[in-house]
Amino acid sequence: MISRRLQSILRQSLATNAAVALLGPRQVGKTTLAFAIQGELEAHYLDLENRLDSVRLEDFPGFYSAHGDRLLIIDEVQRKPGLFQELRGVIDARRREGRRTGLFLLLGSASHDLLAQSGESLAGRIRYLELGPVDLLEQGPVNEASILRLWLRGGFPESLLAMDETSSLTWRESFIRTYLERDIPQLGPRVPATTLARLWTMLAHQQGGMLNMSQLARSLDMSVPTIGRYIDLMADLFLLRRLQPYAANIGKRLVRTPKVYLCDSGIAHALLHIPDTMQLVGHPASGGSWEGFVLSNTMSVSPPHALPFFYRSASGDEIDLVLEMGLTTRWAVEIKRSAVASPSRGFYRACADIGATERFLVHGGTVAYSLPDGVQALPLADFMQRLLALHTS
Image (cartoon, rainbow, N blue to C red; front, side):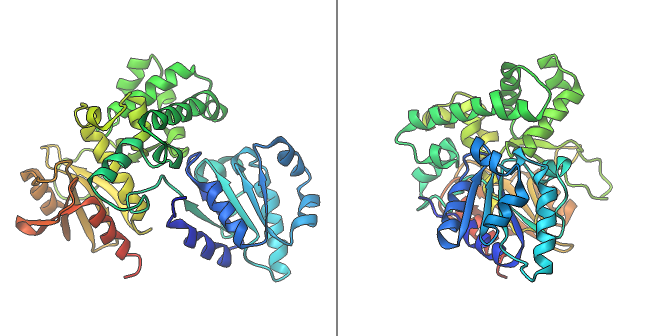
């Protein structure tokens, strides 16, 4: 079992909040974490994809009166959004009785924004935590082989820990089919799975590029609003990430269109039919895939107040990733696959434009070195450790 950094945070959150929602894509390890908590605490587990468990919660007041002395873990909570209103009533009642923490652990495969659209708000009564795929610091010793393995297979535990590349790819292809044939159609307008697969694959090809919904709509013979709804839904299901452009009043024309990345590199490679690292490093999409891989790993360790953007001026000056942390701290990050690289001139000009307080080049090697004008060239693992240190500083 891979040790997840979020486990201690989850434990602390249950000790200080009435309800905690642990959100993330399917098969990312939420249930495993919940079982670990169940082993530590007196807890009762229900899975709303299990018909019997779902029926048991039809009479929630009756069920809770019999089992409310223990932490109640409810898996796949997005399947019963109406439950939120009843949870709110229970939480308020238990507060009046003096019990304010450790009542509910909710596991969901949809973002809290999506849950809130159809469920009663639990604002002020719940803490939301997000569990992403296994990152570079969680997967074990970091070396060139382990970096390539995680990049190729992605961070879903079943894929990462598979016996061989074929087994890993087979698992990811099954994961994709489940989303295409069941999960996405349940939450969005009905579109053939083949069309959704083409959209997802096109987004995998275009990682790191500007999101051009008009072009996608023409290619798929769909309307722009429909494309927009599906991209919103895929983001809500933790399948892709939109990186917004950095907006600043600097007297230059700036690009205003977001970039798009898949949240897991292994899923992207399955969509692109990339079976091994040899084909990956030579694939036309490898640059965008590596950039997305670095972005996902970076966000997994960034402090909550760190806001991610990219910067691009109309003249082409660009920063791959801007991390804004308060009014006075702004990190500029250039991302390169090569272990020996240097930023472009446009990177330096862009750093001056935004007033970057720190400048980094994050590369695919294992050795740190210094570059001119205060740029620190760091391996991805070292850069992630720098971000983790901010949590306790």
